[in-house]
Picture 1 (cartoon, rainbow, N blue to C red):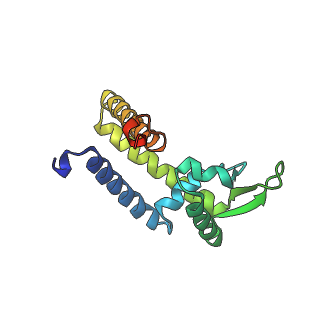
Picture 2 (picture 1 turned 135 degrees about the vertical axis):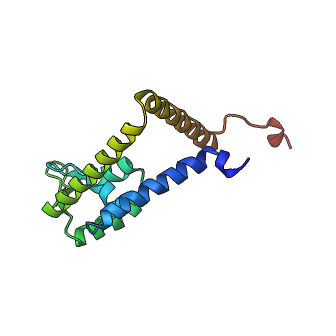
Picture 3 (picture 1 turned 90 degrees about the vertical axis):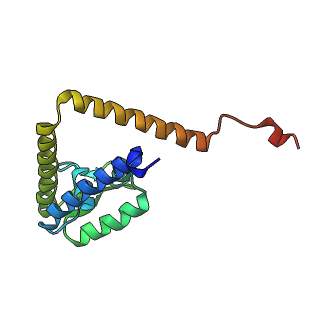
Length: 158
């Protein structure tokens, strides 16, 4: 099978192209795509518990911790103890963070509008259904790795 015939090649190449495009736009405003994605996952009014952001983005908590520290140093976010659960910390956007969040949201909207000008609703519907199936395949593979449902009895019959 040639690499151009594989599903993952097309997903990866499309995501890299999208990421480069987003990074170019973000760089014009002195931030990155990764920071933009964190910003859009923070509630602009109520803040967001720090523990909720990583799962929203599919990140490990350790990776996010470093990014949040960097964003705090850049003046994009600040932390406050949760008023209800004092053990928890909420992340809030500064005015600069809110401006960069708006840039991120606008960039995503513009890209999606341009795609929708080129791709019909039927094609998009099929695209989303295909991706749901791909995600199901991935979930099943991960589940099989964690909880194999087929055992070779001879393996235990030494």
